[in-house]
Structures are given as C-alpha cells and as structure tokens.
Image (tube, rainbow, N blue to C red; front, side):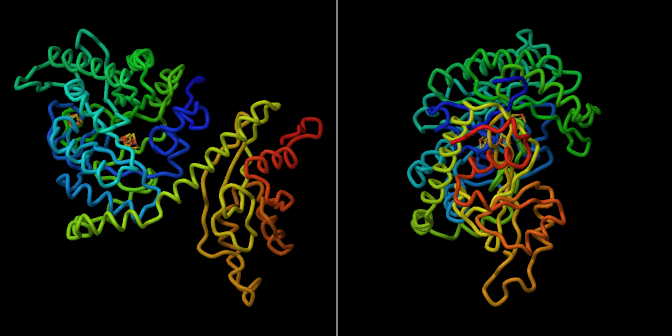
Length: 471
Ligand code: CLF
Ligand code: SF4
C-alpha cells in the first residue's frame, strides 16, 4: 500500500476481499453498504486506562462519556435478530464493552455461541485490551471469531510509556502497578496478536493518540504491528474533558487536535494499512457507521418476544438476497477496476451522479430516481462516494408528471455534482439541472456504472488527445 493509504476493499486479493467485503470497519468501501451492531454484554474490565472512567463505555473503542444499556447473552442475541430483520445491511456483531470483552469471558463466548446457532451468517468481531487474549485463543478459534481488535498504545519494553497510560493491570488474581503492569500488558498483547495471526484471524489494532505521551512513538508501534502481520491500524484521537472524570481529563491532558492526528496518521501510514473512517462508536451501537440507530431498539422492543419468533422473522427477512446483490455489485466493480488498471491513468475531482435501480447499471430514468449514487475517478479507479436521496422522484405518475415537481430538492441534493448519468431525461429537467451547473447525459444508458463513469469523465472533462478506449 502507498503512503497514508486507507484500506480499500477493491485493492485486496480474493481471500482477503471475502473476509472484509462486508465488514464496515475493515473496509472503507464496505462501510457505505454494511452495518454493525455492538452488544453490550461485557461490563467488567481488568486494567485501568487513564483516559477511561468506568462509568462509561470502554474508551479503547468508544467515544468517552457515552453509556450503554447492558444485556445478558440471550437478550443480546434477541436484539441482534430483531435488528437484523429490520436492517438488512447488518453483517457484523461486535462485542466492544462497556468493559473488556475478554474480562467477561463467560458472557462474551456464550453470546457468540448463541449467535452461531441462531444467526450463523453474521461475522463475529471482538475488541479487547489484549491482556486475556492468549488465554482465550482456543475459544476465539472455536467460535469462528474472524476479526479481533487489540488496543495497543505502546510497544516500549521498559514500560515507561505504558506506565503513563495504565496505572495498573489485574491478571490472574494479582494487581500489577506502573511499569511492571505495563510490561505485562505489552507481553500479553504481543503474545495474543501472534496467536491470532498464526490462526489466520484478521487483526486490527487501535491506538489512542495521546499528545506528549505516545505521539512520537506510534509510528514505531505501526511498524511493529505491520511486521507481526496485523492487517489494519486505527489511530484514534484522545478525547479528554474534566467532565468525563478520567485521570487525563482531570489532569488537563488535552484532546488530540486534528493537525497532530493527521501528522501521526501520515507517519504511521507509510507502509501500513490505516483505518481513517472510525466513528468511535458506543458499546451498543447499531446500524451503518455514519448513522447510529441504537435509540430505535430499546430492550422492551425485543426482550418480550420469544427466540423462535425472532429467528423466524430474521430468516424471512430476505437479508441474504439483499446482501448478495451488494456483494455481486462489489465484485463487478472490482472486475471493471482491474481492467481499468491496464489503461492509461486518469484522475478527476469531478463528481458524477448516477441514476440506477440495480446499483450495477445506468438503468433508471431521471424521472423515477430518488437515490442519486455519486462516484468519482481516483487513481484510475472508479470510487463510490455516497448516495444522496430525495423524498420524491421528479415524476410520480403520468397525471402529475412535470407539474408540481420536486426539482428544487433534487437540485439541492446534487448541486455539488458535475454530471448526471441517467437512462433518460427530458429537456425541462436538463435545463433546470444546468442552472446549478450539473450537466446531464443519457448516452450511457444501460452501461455498467463503472464503465459509464470512466467514459463520461473522459468525454466531458478530458482533452481529445487523452481519450482512451475502455471495454
Ligand atoms: Fe465493532 Fe470494532 Fe468490530 Fe467494528 S467498531 S468491534 S471492529 S464491529 Fe469500527 Fe466503531 Fe471504530 Fe470500532 S467504527 S469504534 S473500529
Ligand atoms: Fe476502560 Fe477499556 Fe481501558 Fe478497560 S480497557 S479501562 S474499559 S478503556
């Protein structure tokens, strides 16, 4: 990977692609299409981090100051089934607190066992400080937990940096303080990471960037992680405030500013895959990374239902079909991008909106489009950027067609785009869109989206001599 690169699903070989194509954290592309749920079954913790206050969720994976409602394993599985029936994009269940997943071994693995039984299609994911990792590797393998996140803030063998972050760790009935504790934690983290990698489990590492403590050290951490076969490194900014009641907050250690974060990410990303789309989500987060829907799923909404009832609704929700469509589409993009790689390099900052029903082809009339899928061409690859939606399509039926249209909201939604590719469009909406600088083109009707976008960028925005043929 290149300097400061982020992980893009389309860049990996098939084996890795199959592991990350529907994991919203491990693949930046996947986070546009797939959702995760965290089940808060793990309240206890076995270490103390100076950026954490136990009143709140684990700050190694969550935004400090956020609390979650706790669940037992059975309730957790009911919640997953209920959410999965409703949010068809749900592909991953994670245990990320509110304490440490592996300081709550019984509850964590009971939850995974029940999930394997009732929702075997879901990927299982856990997040841990790493202290109990090596002691639980057999269970991680047994329950097919394919993705593990380990928070590692220092690889300093003297324990000096670690002792400024961790006042103590508690291991096998004994409390270890200061550098002694930090050294033990590091030893256990490295031992655990090695075992995970040896067992073919995809490891992500989180590091909390703390100005003045590990800011100059994290590139070394990144190098070591890469050397050990860790797949992805997520540098998280410290969020520090006296109102959170944490040691760092009360001592006035500042939150990490954006500039420092970018600098350290740049250094760490020299040859490591970096995650840059983390949302520091809560221990009971639900939905796509960009839109937490946890508030919609109260305990009362699922706890009263029977497991059988929830399993049956889950199975009948046509989730498989929905997700398969996305995966087929991702594969098609990968294939087209492979072909584009062989052609002359183009890049463009132009944003291209597309009308598409199938999300594979330019196969929808402008008049019927409510979701405008936006793409651009970067480093010779066609990238999906986002979908902008409007409540009403331009044409809602023959009688009302052309009268009382929602053209203003459509113009507002796609005014940042340079071009709209659609299956068909009439002169009136063409003129309207031109008034906000959006050119329209229906000559790529029924082309695959990637080829259409690529060709359209050449046709509209590149000089004659740079035109090249794409299949
Ligand atoms: Fe959850 Fe973490 Fe698994 Fe993702 S979150 S356990 S790897 S399923 Fe993702 Fe949320 Fe960032 Fe975590 S955006 S906080 S990295
Ligand atoms: Fe808090 Fe998580 Fe650290 Fe435990 S591991 S002290 S829950 S931040």
